[in-house]
Every structure is written in structure tokens, then in C-alpha cells.
Length: 327
Ligand code: FAD
Image 1 (cartoon, protein in one colour):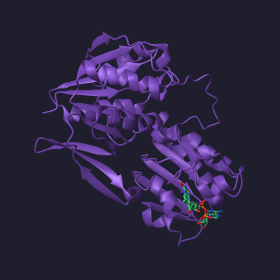
Image 2 (cartoon, helix red, strand yellow):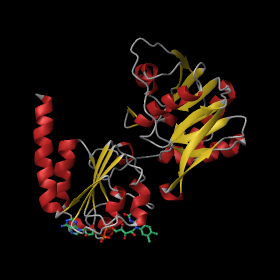
Image 3 (spheres, protein in one colour):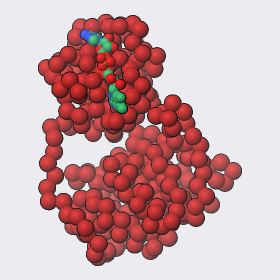
Image 4 (cartoon, helix red, strand yellow):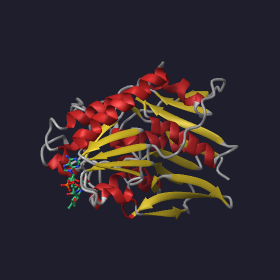
């Protein structure tokens, strides 16, 4: 039975990433009566304690060290390795984020344990933890067990439902000092590209445009819809290659993999490489003027029409419905 599960909380721009809260829910699922421990790194670590305890942490390890403010592989590897020696967890969970994807294999190699990456579901079956993860770019799912002494997994954002907030829960807070001696790189500055403000990997709704959007200005109609819905704006590689938008918006096999509750694909044909990044979205709406476009094969709802007519109509209707809901 899994007694202790260690979750690494990720903070970006001073905010706790949602995938860390999902990590707490994942940890509770595999350790129903055990201890869910969360590690938070950096100078503002203590700012996250209330949220972490209310969403399921039993114990919070705060490692308040400015060398851990930004993710760097050497510093985080040292900090996690030392914490694991102290805590001796039965399982470790972190987000399948840019940092998680970089750190987890290094940590697994250092500890000599296996890693189950990009997990979308997990459960206890016959006293064993069974992980579900997509394979072949999301066309099939694999169920996997770990045979390592410490079970280690990264979870894909937006897949594990978070626990209900419990405002009465109080966690045990441990301040833990780690002297980072193995700092091989230092981040001097983070220069951000212009973005829609919504992190695509954690967005609940994404409005995405393809070559059918026709120009950079064409994306304005998508942005208006996204603003009304509080959505992120994504793109196909076709749109990025054509110079309509930045590659940071690209979704697909060589872009971001997303799992929002709602994905609205506008003027995207549905090439296999695009589907690899979004076909596991919970609801897919496709708007395309070609009724034979392959995107309709994966769509839950399809609208055959010109996106420049359809999208503004949707924006108007959503405005009415959402304004009505706010009254
Ligand atoms: P198109 O295929 O040109 O489709 C445009 C669509 O818009 C058409 O279906 C058309 O009917 C529709 N349309 C046109 N005008 C309108 C209008 N006014 N209203 C409504 N609909 C309209 N692609 C990705 O997206 N992500 C990736 O990560 C990715 N990785 C790749 C990796 C490799 C190794 C390779 C070889 C390719 C990769 N691609 C990727 C590219 C992929 O194969 C496609 O070329 C690309 O997805 C096509 O983009 P698109 O659907 O926007 O353009």
C-alpha cells in the first residue's frame, strides 16, 4: 500500500500551477489513508501553503531558497534528491510540464527507478497502482504498472479532477533548508513572448486557428471569441508557418499537447500531426468550409461554413448567454 506520496508543486510567475493541485488529487487517489506530502521551492514558497492544504496536502515541505525561484535542472535535481532521501516516499508525482518533462527523467536516472510519464489517469487495481497514458500520439491508451520500489509518474495537465476545496484542513508545515551547491546554470532574465495570457497547456477552453484564418489580422475574430469565453488562442502549424502567429501557439505533434474541456478548431483541416496535440480534448467543435475536412472525423460538433461568418455569430451568442448568466 502506498503510504507516502511526494508531489512537487510548480510555481510560475508567483502562481501555483493548476497541475500541482491535480497532483494532490492524484496522490490522494493512490494513497487513500496515507500521507500526501507536497514540496514547494523558492523564496515565495510559503505563499502557496493555504491553497495546498485546502486542496489535499497533509504535509508541506517549504524549501525557501532563491536559487530555486526559477527551474534549473541541476538545482531542482539536487533539491528533489535530497528531499527524497529525507522523506523516503513510496511514490512521487509531478506535472508533465516543460519543467517536469526535463526533471523527471534525470531524477529517475539518479534514483535508479522507473518513470511513467504523461499519465492521464491512475487507479488502484488489485492493490497495485495502474497508470493510463496515451500512446501513438493519442490514438491508443496504454495501462502501465511500475515495478520500482518508488513509483514515479508525471501527470498531463487538465486530466485528473482536483479534490473539493476543504477550508478546514490544516497541513503540517515543515521548513526545510537545502544548500544548493550544484548550480551549473543561472537564469539571468526571462523574456516573455507576447501571449494571450492563458496558458494553453492548462486552458479549459482553446480557440484555435489554421491556415483558413488567412492572415495575422484574421486571428482577431478568434481572439474576440476567446476573450468572451476566457479561452486561450492556439494555432495549427500551417498558420504558424504562414506567419499568421507565433510558434508558441502551435498545437500538435511538434507543438503543445492540450486537453481542454472545449477545443474550437477554426479553418484547420485536421492533419494527423495537429490531431496528435488536441484529439484528447473533452469536446471538439470544428468550423470548416470543406464538409470533407478530416477534422470533422474527430469533432463532437461540426459547423460547415466560413469561419469569418460563423465565429462572430458564436461570439455574439456566447456574449448574450454569458452576460445573461452573470445577471
Ligand atoms: P490546411 O491543411 O491548409 O487547412 C486549412 C483548412 O482551412 C482547410 O481545411 C480549409 O477547408 C479551411 N478553410 C479555408 N478557408 C476557410 C474559411 N474561410 N472558413 C472555414 N474554413 C476554411 N501541424 C500542426 O498543426 N501541428 C503540429 O505540431 C505539426 N507538426 C508536424 C510535424 C511534421 C513532422 C510534419 C511533416 C507536419 C506537421 N504539421 C503539424 C503540419 C501538418 O501536417 C499540416 O500541414 C498542418 O496541420 C495544416 O495546417 P492547417 O490545417 O491550418 O492548414
